[in-house]
Length: 401
Image (cartoon, rainbow, N blue to C red; front, side, top):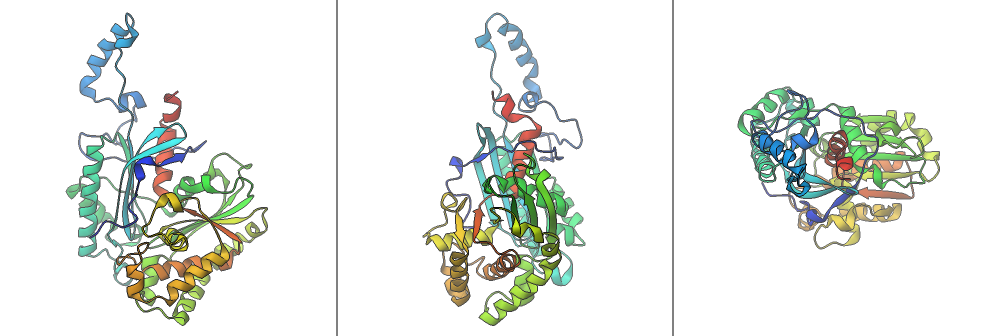
């Protein structure tokens, strides 16, 4: 499998804003002696966590010497965190260290593995898909070891939630890739996605619809304004996990030859899945400075095409405001393209060419349910939310002062 074109380009320069007031979430880590799992042992203080136990006695001696000469006290290496999201379509990893205004990404990995391939028809993860995912996870483990990751949370979402053999796959990953995957529930996924991208919401907005179009599901949240609480998770008024994602919709309707009539059918069917949430969150549309905030490969692809990027660049896309007429223009262009033209587009690529219109159908259904003159595009989400929450639990920013 090829590494996805959008793979975290220029990622070493990325810094994301700090999350305030986050509620602690449990974490998991690499198996083996490299990292201890917080679920099997109490989480040590950050200073201890970043220091191998074998050198603690020497550090203690150095601390005694420091009473005579403070310059003799060695500095602990910086804490390094990892967040991994194994979804229905992608396997994505971010490795980061705390920075003044959030964190700085030091390494990243993204590969399309299509773990949920054929899941809708069989209710099982197929062998080929599991093989692809395990190989990608082995690469992720190597990156985490190379970067001396001190704490990690490795999650998997809809594909493993829905598959009858999802737990068997998690055990296989533990045995072969030596990683402990956590199957998170739908609310946790929605909350983490919101936490990762909420900093991009208009500070003046009293209501925002945040959505994350995944491979097997779409998480959608009605979030209140910043005056309600500092923690984005505390501002969630309504949320839903919808059984529509780019893989499931593409497998249901086909993604290679998509006529305008078929695309409209896809939009209408996705709209029906949205009806329950749209009713509960109807008041969001009347909120002052209301807007949409989207995080997913679909919305970043639409943004990249709108900007005419010769090669996807998250620095150009993350935080971009798009008007509704610009979004419609891009979707119209994509519907008119044949499969070969979509595959040749640098912001899509051949591995996503059969999925992009399914994602656009979900996007368009959300826009119709919640009309807004503007949409903010986020190239951040669940992994960033995981990183921010782990760092908050460890009081990482306080320790830097």
